Length: 93
Image 1: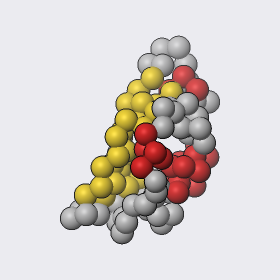
Image 2 (image 1 turned 90 degrees about the vertical axis):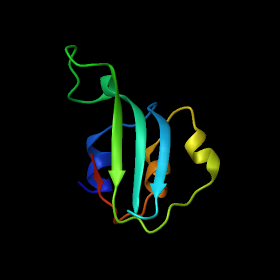
Image 3 (image 1 turned 30 degrees about the horizontal axis):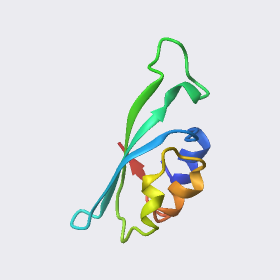
Image 4 (image 1 turned 135 degrees about the vertical axis):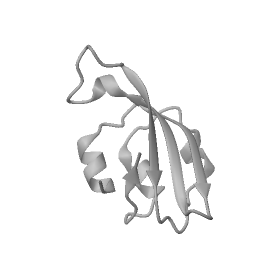
């Protein structure tokens, strides 16, 4: 899945970034997100309202952005998430 596909499929508004880790040896960035599952188009009452979502981006050459980007209480839009990762990275996990 590409980043474009991910942000078109999932609604990240008000979800929280719990942690961001970059491993320069494996060139992977891992995001743990307290994800608002209840805000998704395919949500039903038999699913958990919030879930921990783990996104792993591979082949990342660098990560940049101001530290407060990762200290946000919630994700207000996906532009912040996209700016944090190279656009050619694919999330997995």
